[in-house]
Length: 302
Image (cartoon, rainbow, N blue to C red):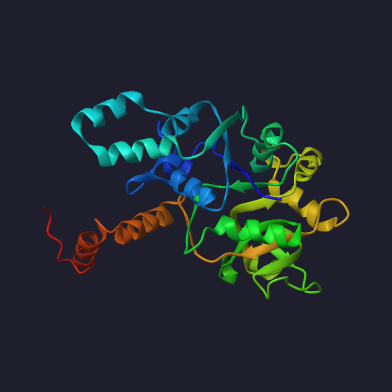
């Protein structure tokens, strides 16, 4: 079955970037000339996604506006003869079929996904956390979709992290008794552990914000007890799937190809901006030269 739908939870406050995110959603913070969420949606489209469900809140209307038609702006650009930017603006509006669902209370990632239940329907779907910018030769979500089709099991993206950093992530527990269907990149899982101490971590494979899930996850989310702050955690529901092969499981982890940046964290966000600036054909050479001079203390302001 083709995976046609991706859920993008974007209702959070983005407090780590205050005061910048007081009026501008963190998903719209620019990485050079495109907002972070646009990179994630472009990845989803490249992986075959046809419909994006934004799970939003009242202070995130500008995300919807970004992917809508901007008639006044287009008229100005057309009058100026600025065809390059006119095409870019129109391409964003025509990018994908967009559906919005309101999350009236921010009660965790699992709750945000559950809000999309009616819009998703009874088919497998992807979940994309747009804070995670993944740069690679092929779309990371496409690797997960291929793994889902090969295994008929829910899959989560994972990456290796230093052992002493496991307490910063959800960590998967690989099931070594089961074979990998592709020689090691797709790994059967016994379960997941949320932010374990290094001594207690079952592996150093951390969960990254890409998932392809069976629609059975919705029943598990409804049955998941509310945790701290009344939140419903997606990892708790996935844990149930992983434990119940007869009821929606098993679950696999996919070690994706590519480099992940957390654009919701200041240092990683800046690293992503520098990388994308260096890789742009029109900007990269000059910016890279300036950056080298800046690092060596020889930069001259223009």
